Amino acid sequence: MPWDIQYKNGIYLPQIDWWLDAQKPANRAVVSHAHIDHCARHKEIVCTPATARLMRARMPGKRVEHLLPFGQAEQLTSDTSVTLLPAGHIFGSALCLLEHSQHGRLLYTGDFKLHAGLAAEPCATPQADVLIMETTFGRPRYVFPPVEEVRAALVKFCQQAFAAGATPVFYAYGLGKSQELLCILGAAGLPVMMHSETFRLTETCRQLGLALPDYHEFSADKLPGHVVICPPQSRNASFLRKIPAPRTAMVSGWALDRSTVFRHRCDAAFPLSDHADFPELLRFVELVKPKRVLTLHGFAADFARHLRQLGIDAWAISEHNQMELPLLGPPRPAV
Ligand SMILES: [Zn+2]
Image 1 (cartoon, rainbow, N blue to C red):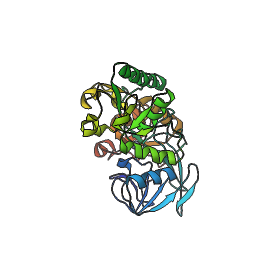
Image 2 (image 1 turned 180 degrees about the horizontal axis):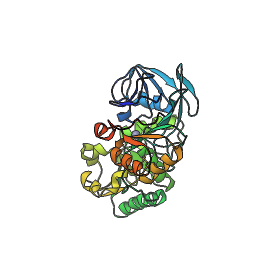
Image 3 (image 1 turned 90 degrees about the vertical axis):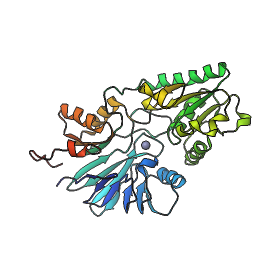
Image 4 (image 1 turned 135 degrees about the vertical axis):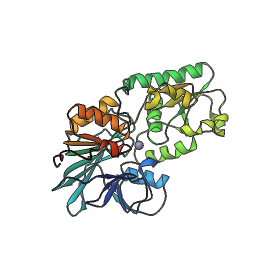
């Protein structure tokens, strides 16, 4: 009997009555990582110790936590085991591997990337019968430049800003991207100041054992000579007015879209991403060797179509579910 997989505000598995990254409060959910769009106020969760701690910082409240270190299999139900493996997305982020004697191996990626980052554990690539994967950058045009090239460009942007008497300001998500950016800037000897929200999340990562260069909370008095990292939404806030002559840049995989500079009203954009690009998505499928792929987030329908053209049984499970999943036709082999 195959896995019964439903999508409604996250993945629901009725055969075992567990959710994967439910976006609304659920009784029992595996949480892949601590980004807000993958969490909710659940009653009972399974996640890595780092994700639990980061979740507590972002979403206080009582819940039963089952902390599962990477690579350690535990029984989720009487006939299903769960193993969390590094997803390479942000610190503590996990792929979730479920094994059931009749339904087979199901791998759920959450968000992931294959290229090595400086602030996340390297991504694992276990084999599975069914793969449920995120496809944020699931169109062929999304190919990131080599990471070293982007890192060098970020450093050059700072040096040029300082040379012009300006303060380099990076817009980056507080959890994941900001710590990655800090590692890049620190390695180049550039001192960093962080918006208070970013600072708080970075402190939590450091306390959890993530090795990071020095950084300071933003202080207008001590600003000269520092690079500033702040969340994207703070661009219009009073925060930015505290910075004389800011030179701003968005740091995101979406920088591959020309409109990014315009949309974020910044001076530059750099394609440094916590997600897999199109070639990495394909490579991941190759390595996992699934019999069936279900896609969600981003260009899910496009990527599933691309996989089908390669002869892989693949369907979008998220936004275009009704149109994508075949309602008629021969039954697909059980996986
Ligand atoms: Zn994420």
